[in-house]
Length: 74
Image 1 (cartoon, rainbow, N blue to C red):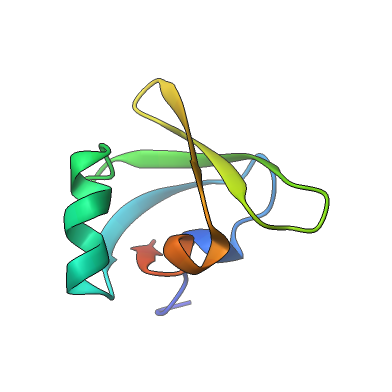
Image 2 (cartoon, one colour; image 1 turned 45 degrees about the vertical axis):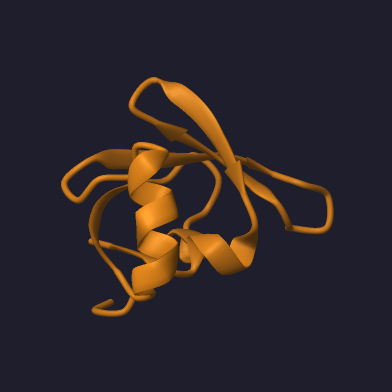
């Protein structure tokens, strides 16, 4: 499970952000509150699986699955 990302989570599953695989995307995600050490929970997915909705720091954050795949978790 060393390369697990937010895109791999199942609905209701929680994980802690470890790092990011894309430096450019990480700046955008950091500004939205996705900080290393923060717990995230997959709230729901669109009917076709993209986009997804995460609970991050008390609010819901929607993002594309490709963006979520750059957030590495433990």
